[in-house]
Amino acid sequence: MRTPDTTCGPPEARPAPDMNEVVGRDDLLLVTLDTLRYDVAVELAATGRIPHLARHLPGGVWEKRHAPGSFTYASHQAMFAGFLPTPAAPGPHPRLFAARFAGSETTAGRTFVFDTPDLVSGLADAGYRTVCIGGVGFFNKRGALGDVLPGLFQESHWEPEFGVASPTSFEAQVERAEKVVAELPHEQRLFLFLNASALHQPNWFHTPGATRETGDSRATHAAALEYIDRHIGRLFAVLSSRRRCFAIVCSDHGTAYGDDGYVGHRLGHEAVWTVPYAHFFLEPSA
Image (cartoon, rainbow, N blue to C red; front, side):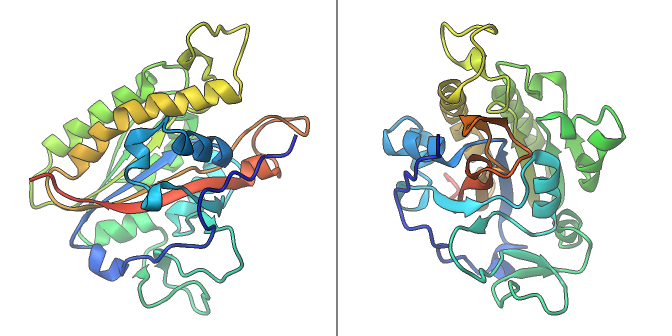
C-alpha cells in the first residue's frame, strides 16, 4: 500500500522571513509532532478535524517536506544543527538557520547563521533562554543517550507523564510550558522546544473502544493528532502572551502501519521520509 499523495497545496517552500530580524526580536517555538505522517496530517486538515492547527497553517495546508532522518534521534540531531525538513521539490532551498560553514549552498542572506556547533547554543549566545520539554525516550534523561538531546538546552524537562505511555502526555507538556513562561522575566527572549510524544506508538488509547489487543493503526494515529489539536491552542496562546512568537511545527519523521508490509520507522519508506511542515508567526493577544 503506497502512501497516497493527498497534497492540498503546492509542495514548494513558502517565502521565509528574514531570520536575522526575527532572532533577537521574537520568541521562538519549535514543536516536533513525533512520527506524524504527512498523509494523515493533510487529510485531517482538509476535513476540518484539526481546526486549531489548521487556522495557523499558511493557506490552511501543510507543506510537504522530506525528513532529515528516519527516526527521532537522527532527525533531531540534524534539526538542532539547522537542517529542518527539506521542501519536497528540487532545490537548493535556503535554510532558516545554519552553522557557519564554508561552501554551504543553503545558507542565504535571510538565514540566521550561528558560530556554535548547534542551533540551541547559537540561540543561547544570541541571548535566548533555551528550554526543552521532552516527550519520547530520547529526551527522558534516564541514561547517557537520553541526556544527549536535552543536554543541548539550558533547561530541560521530562517526566513519565510526558512520555509515550501517557494518554494525557500533551496536556502535561503544555502545562509545563505554561509554567516555564510564567517564571520567565518578561524581557528574557525564549526558545522553547517541545517534542510531542502522543502520536508515537502506543497511541491506541486515543480512540474510544480501542484496546491494547486491537493495537495501533493509522486511525488511532489520526485520533492522537486530534487529541493534540484540542490542546495546542493553549501552547500557542502562552507562547504569544509576552510578544510575537515565530513558530515551527513539523514532524521529525513518519511511521508505517503496514505500508508495503512495513511497520514502524527507522527505515527508508515514503511514509517515513515524507513529513508535514509549517512555520508562522503567533501574534500577541494584547
